[in-house]
Image (cartoon, rainbow, N blue to C red; front, side):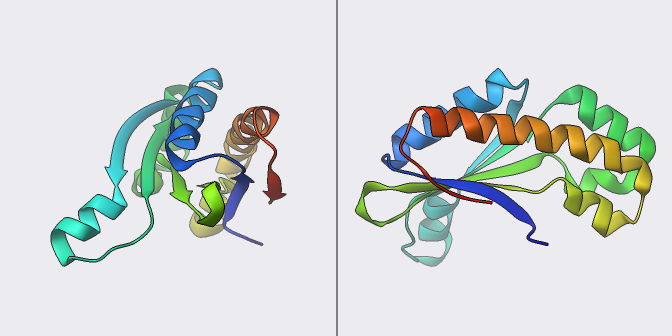
Length: 138
């Protein structure tokens, strides 16, 4: 099983990043953190990598329920959603498959929550697909 779900979009990075924020919000996710990975690597190491931003997305009711089922699951929260630039004006949006939380913890109490989170993330990716001509990879 892959640990990511994602979509490749036929749109520029900046547009994909903004569209991803909108799609996540439409599914009840807030963005708690934002890390510009390419800027950080440039500043810290002088490395040049294509534009890439990590959005720390959270849907508080799901986060609370997950913590109640497995107090240590906080190390896997928030749900990271990565938007990165590809060649030819395309971009890729990926998120960790929430089922990975169940696999890593072995706690089946998280299975229903992971399923709900997956449904919501899939809906956000579908929203992105509806506004682009994507090549889907899941």
